[in-house]
Amino acid sequence: MDDDGEAAAVRSARPREVLRQPAFALFWSAGSLRALGTAISGVAFNVLVVSVLHATTFQISILSALSVVPYLFLGLIIGALMDRRRRQRTLVLTSIGRAIALAAVPVLILTGTLSFWSVAVVTLALGILVLFADSAAQPLLPRIVPRESLVMANARLGQSETVAGTAGPALGGVLLSVLGTPLLFAFDAALTAVSTVLQSRIKVDEPAPAPRAPGRHIGHDIAEGMRYTYRHRTLRPLALSIHTWFLGNSIVTTVFAVFVLRQLELRPWEYGVALAFGGVGGFLGALVAPRLGARLGAGHAIFLARALAVMPWLVLALTPVTATGHGIILVTVIAAAQFVYGLAMGIEDPNDTGYRQSVAPDGIQGRMNSTIRTVNRVVFFFGALLAGLLATTLGYRLTIGVGAAIFAVAALIVVFSPLYSAQHAQRPPEA
Image (cartoon, rainbow, N blue to C red; front, side, top):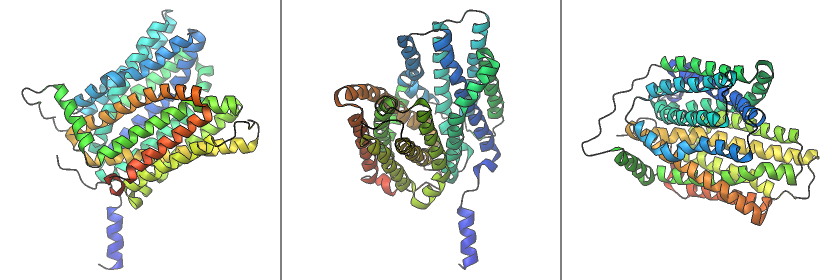
């Protein structure tokens, strides 16, 4: 092959920009609106619970738990259902339900019937609906874009979520002061309604799921999904590495705010700046993730991200606790640490998610994803409790050091497994 022919072959093999594909453009737009609305209404929820309902610390903890409970008790079940249901239809129906739940809040406020328990019901309903939506979206994506474009597609989704998570709270604060709490929830409901319309217009080929064999029930489906995930040559180490990462993440994120605000004495605005740098790192990481995945391969890119995650927390663990929070050097160190951590997550997530979406057959996508996601939530829940115990007995700095060591273990799981040499799949796997 001459040079021109070789260059043409390389260009043809390179995945084209996924936002130019109409189905993904609709999928991405709907997801971006949902992420923005969630970030905006999150501000209103906090104000509603703290300033309007004057909820106690215990009541606030109940609301936080209700947002996680659906994953713990329904994650595996809903994941199995997504392998027996049309996923696009599920996305549309859950978006309708979410719009109704959000619209109920201003109705409760204006009619004077708002109470802690009514907010708790709305929170639980939204948690279940989001679980359905997430369980449908991940296995639907490989039906929307080619397998070789999955990393880029997940990167684009990650970029919009990072922007929404960074800018959404600030925008929510402004809108809250202009519109007030009821109209802000109505605004989020309207955004969700628009995303519903966009999702309904996605053209995707979804064959009818195969009926369950006689004598089988949903428990058999769940067990099959867990066996597939944890017996797969590369998905097993990937899942174990993710679970380990979630344990480290639960520990460091639980104590980070207290450590830098109380012991390192950062001012609140300095803390906010540091978190903003994390968002910038996440955006840039998602921007370069497709190129790194293509150049290094899935396993090497995931390992790189896992290794990067160790560095910022190791640096913070070695930061002297006697340092004051008003020096520009200290603020720079903490902001840089958050930037690197965000960069690592931005690189890892598209390559991680894109790889498992590309290697698993369509008929087990929902169960594979829900198995990993549910175990992650369980690990995070107990990791947060462990963080409190470690911080009490070892102190914040050593606790963060433990988290850094756990991140290192997550990286080692990748490098000493077949996953390390894995490449991104270029064609659908055999069923």
